[in-house]
Each structure stands twice: as structure tokens, then as C-alpha cells.
Image (cartoon, rainbow, N blue to C red; front, side, top):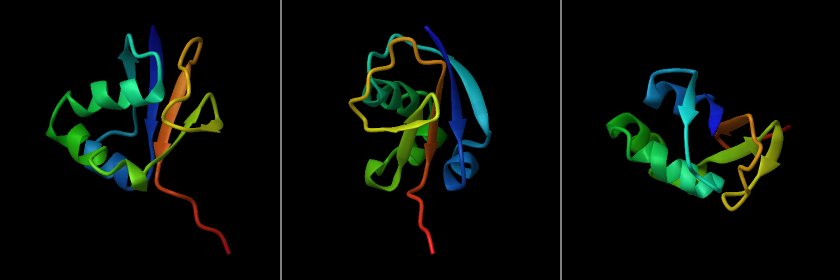
Amino acid sequence: MTVDVLYFAWLRERIGQPSERVETEAATVRELVAELAARDAWHAAAFADMTAVRCAVDQELADLDAPLAGAREVAFFPPMTGG
């Protein structure tokens, strides 16, 4: 399947691009992260500490075990803070 992967904040800086279209066989977000991290050193650095990364699948917050079946977009970003 093909998904659009979006990167925000320092993830965008480490990877060097705001988004990419990815062809994947991943069934979950966790599997997608593993595929992305294996691509190159930039992706590996961005996903080295998943406690500092949040994700959304089709614009809904999701955890790493969220299924990707039918997903069109996965976004990765640092934890949100508010005030």
C-alpha cells in the first residue's frame, strides 16, 4: 500500500524533508517505523527514541500498534505541550 508520511518539528529537520510517499507492507505503525528507520542514517536518527515521538493515522492520534490497513496518511511529531 502507499501512504503519505508527514514529519514535523525536529523530525523534519533530522530527516531533511517534510513528507514522503512510501510504498509499504507494514501492518502497524510500529512496522512502518522499523521500515523507515532502516532506510538511512537520517531516518534512523529521527526514530531512535520513540518515547519522544507521537503519531497520527489519518489525522487521529494513534499508538505504535495502530493498524495501517486503509490508511492514507501517517504523521510523526514530538509530544505536544500546552499552556
